[in-house]
Image (cartoon, rainbow, N blue to C red):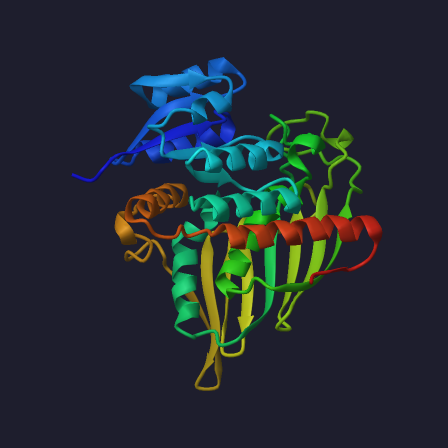
Length: 361
């Protein structure tokens, strides 16, 4: 029988209950043996629903990290706490899955990367859109050379109305920003991953907070959204060192008739192009001197069902992460890659604030 990976959960709020714990619970080679939250009641409820009978509950994550039977820690806290908890966990000898974004700041993300290198422990970030069936197919299509050189991309995460107004989403100190750091981070990660390009040269960006009533029409209700200091929307131009360009567009609230879900992108290559928009994959190319558009049915076949992973993107993410621990292999999302995402996101904010382009070394 395959060995059991014992996991500690740090942060038992929305993302833990909505994504990580339900996905881990479906894996036979996983046990959740410890739960930590600053609100002890949340940790206790998580234990009762997902934990082993003898699972422990903590208010202080440092106490959880002392437990030597815990091999893996999932860091599912607000962005501000990602770095310190992850660094402490890595130095405590744990492998770490940290929810996106990697950290509130690029400097903190670098601390996490350095800690992973120093300890030799695995660190990955929760960019689950890489694990969608359409993303997997697109990656294989690109690696087969079908797009040629990818020199233009558009990454999209646009809500018409959808400002999250619960928890700490509207707390700039805890989160670090609005839709750029919240949902554009997914689309940018997927775009860079598919392009296999992690060498930015320059970023120009602009955030916007212009709408008179951004809270109107919000499916989550009116909770003072218009008073938040965070951006409602943003746009950025990213030039890579090889000359490729990326246009980033994102919003929580924008007067647009065509919203686009996070984890969406358009890639244009020298041979063909493709787009992943709202979980639909389309390929465009020219055959026999005629433009051809192909809708790829990713619900058929088994392109995403490799390595024994089945189900939603979150479930496949969890299965592949645990498989990397058992097989002693690299996780799908490398910390070096996630660090570049954080660098670019921070550069967008900096460029908007200063009105100048941000250049990378």
